[in-house]
Image 1 (cartoon, rainbow, N blue to C red):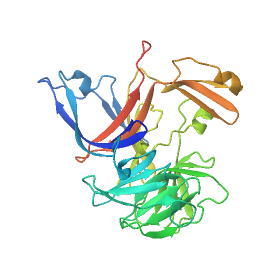
Image 2 (cartoon, one colour):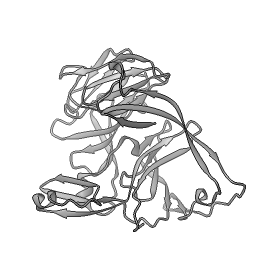
Image 3 (cartoon, helix red, strand yellow):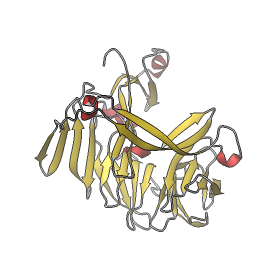
Image 4 (cartoon, one colour):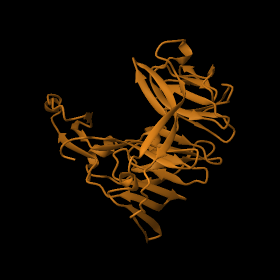
Length: 333
């Protein structure tokens, strides 16, 4: 799935990935598989099989699209914050600025709008993330109100929780609903944990899996990079996770314990390079075109450039996992 921004209107395009055609030469994988402390370590060499295949090509086949640059209102979006799909293939699209959710069938036909702006039950101030539970109900997290609303597939309001963390702050980048539990992937106050489990009454039960810092703790605590595509919660409970600031590894957890680590040798040892400024005004004066981000917070400024970021893990219909990366091209790499 690809989100494309065009003239402030957001289009959602679906693609079949991918058609692969290769030359006649076939090469055996040259990686290493080891086991250490109950964890399977898969180490890939710098040069992968893809690099060794002659005339290899990937074709992105445009399958269908939801949204238009110009057209009727139900197909015009302002700021898409999340997308989810139910068991029938119906697609829910959350617009964070309009604070509404539109439902489309699997062929892209508009069905209904299931939310609106407000603070009452089933109303929203800032829709952050969506999920579907085992009953095909829609679960919606509002990070400004700090609460969850549950809507039926017909848009009927079923439940709105109290504020999940009355004395804390929570930002749910992604919601999962295995069994009768609810799991949030995101920031919880100052917790270093990645995942936070709630019971069926939305009381917090436990938090799991420490975030491992890549380089600069102050910067990463402010900009941890919780993005919806950085983890996949599979039906069997396994979790696939990779950092937004991609450090050349994908982690697989079973029962909240690390079971497999897949890594690749790379010339890019650190995914970003930053400068930390205590003088925010001085940082704002810097105009270096090489810098692709400026982040301000906690009385400091972080300015620098990224070398590689994960745009998200995706699982294809045949089970293949794909990790899309944003890579900086420069004479230094």
